[in-house]
Image (cartoon, rainbow, N blue to C red; front, side):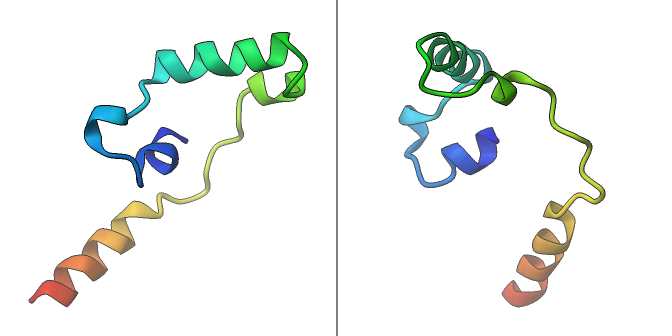
Length: 61
């Protein structure tokens, strides 16, 4: 999730895991988000970064 959030942001504005978790807990506590967002996500079946890296290397050559 951090990779998605931090993607378009400049480096000095990146979120850390602990900072994001504190913010999400505050949103849940204040009723802006449902409590389900704090439950663990299921495992991803595959890692989608490797094919993107390979495609990027192939395109650069």
